[in-house]
Length: 296
Image (cartoon, rainbow, N blue to C red; front, side, top):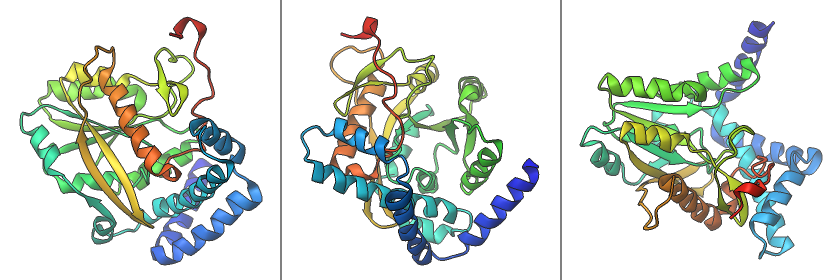
């Protein structure tokens, strides 16, 4: 039954992906109307997240961000489907990488690179940056497998559009250390703004005016591998067009247990505040509260 479901869904996506993006954006406009106006998909979560993240903004400003977010979310859906058939020429025209030389520079000493990013812009298109530099030759992405095995398989196939190695989260540490021992230089992408699972809520900071648990796996792996740390800043400058800039993550002056992770969160926060509608507000990021014994 799963095999039939997979082929039906993949077949449908393949047909839709043959349409040009100009047509897919018309579908996106209709999808926005359904998601936002009719279904109200996670609208309460989005509104609550926005109100708490921007306490100084008026309700009208919040509603404006909310509308723009749902429009962007609809665009992300059709853009992700388009990956099934998009050409190298078109994706490179739509994903502008401003400074790939920074990655080449960091890679010059043979050390691995830990690249932090958020659910900002279109994170499924982010992998297109790997065609803009030659070193490291191996690019990996760490992902959290979906509970639905069919959809997990479909997303892995969509992401295989780019020559990146997808590593399940629970295998990341072992797999990456093995590659280091084998003398392979890698760039590892971590979408590091997700909420840790309920068993790992041990590290907290303030992010977007709220107590926020954060995951430390990327930095623990990076430290074991003696890696460089960088942040990928994403800017959506018009519909279907993104500008991506690599930034080296600086160490803060104060001593912190996970300084690179916390600096990444500050950098991401600045990106979000400039254009908040392009972050994933429908995620239940603040579902859990900071335990009393971890409050400052």
